[in-house]
Image (cartoon, rainbow, N blue to C red; front, side, top):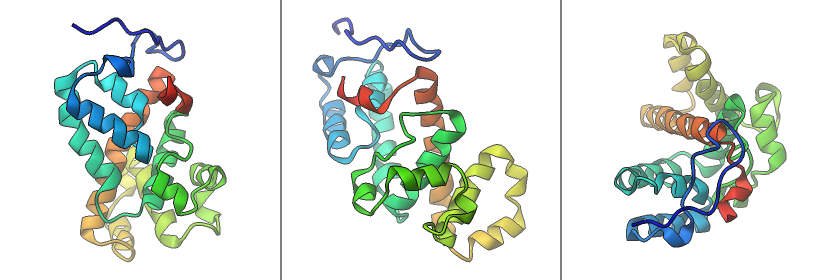
Amino acid sequence: MLAAPTHRHGRGVMADLDVLDRVDIVDAELIGALDRSDRTGLPGSWLLRLFARRPDSARLMIPMLDAVNRGGSLSARLKELVRSLLAGMVGDSYYAGPRCRVAIDEGVTDELLSAARSGYEDDPRLSDRERLALRYSEQIFLDSKKVDDDFYVELKTHFTEAEIMELGTFASITYGLCVITAAAGALPEDDDL
């Protein structure tokens, strides 16, 4: 039987939803995921400790989260830009700032992520490819009808079809995670609690 959690989230609409304390997690797969999250910054220990409330579900989510965050051919920088944009769209502080250690090593800063969340279309620090990925990621949630045949023709000038599928999958999963963390009022520093 799991011990009662000692950390209560007091912010957001899911304030009564408790995450488990790290010491209460005994499942080896979940512990491994927490260790990877500590090393890489993704997907974040707070989120994993929330998912640990349902270890059977968490064990299904972990390979998917590992694949979208650390796998594929899209750069860590591009994924971090998209993650921050989507976090900004739902008011999520947890994923808005720099998280991915590889992306940080690639020069991703708070300022660059702020540009991704507002004014990315004109920011000279972003490549055409990055701006297009941000527009695609934004539009699939704001107005998917704008992602029409012409949009896909434009995407194919910068991305392979496999990369477009990867980007759409990454954006979809990340958007859902941002909604969860925003609703809970999770903050980046909650990873350390």
